[in-house]
Image 1 (tube, rainbow, N blue to C red):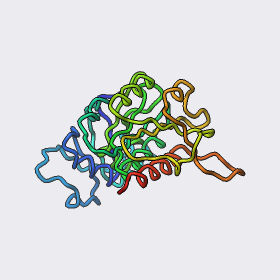
Image 2: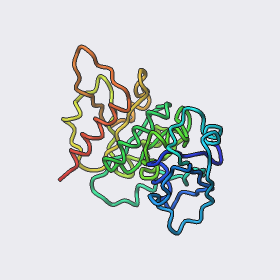
Image 3: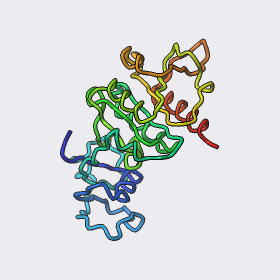
Length: 240
C-alpha cells in the first residue's frame, strides 16, 4: 500500500478532516470552493489554490473531485481483538471473503456506516487497500467504519467465535433465509465474491448459512446490493 494517497470530493474530504485519527498532509482547492463549509478550524494543514489542469494531473481525468482533495496517510489498523473492548450486547460486523473491487467495498462501507456496523473485516490478499476510488465510493464512511485486515480468514473466524460472535455466511443454498435468523447478540455476516461466493473452507467455519429470498427467474445480485440487504436485516433484527 502506498504511504500516501488522495481523497477527493466534498463528502469524503469533510469526513477525513473531521477524523482525529486521519493524518492529512495537504489540501488542494479550486477558486470556486467554499472553504467556509469545511471543518478546518484548529487544523494546521497546508492548503494550495489549484487549477483544473493540476487536479487532472494529480487525480486523473475521470475523478469527480468537486474542486477539493486532501493527501492523506492510511488510517492506523484495527485488530480483531479490539472488538473485545466493546461490551454492547448486540453487535454486527461484516466480513468480505475476497471481494476485490474497490467500488463494491466502498459501497459496502457506506452501508456499514448507515447501519452502525462495528467493523469491516477483509483478507490481506484479494481485497483492495485504502485508495481514492474506495474513499470516494464510501462517501465518508471510510472514516467511520474501521477496516480490519486478516491474513487467514479461517483463523479470524475462530478468534471472533472466542470473542463471542456467531458467524453467518450468505450463500445461495443457505439453510434459512435472512428473515429467519435470530440476530440478537454478536453477529458476523460473511459474504463472498460475485460468482464464486464464500470459499468452501470459509463455509466450514460458519455457524450457519443463510440466503436471500429472490425471484426464481433471476437470482444474481451485485455483492454490494446483497450486503445492503443482509446488513439491513441484521440491523432491523437487533433493534429493541
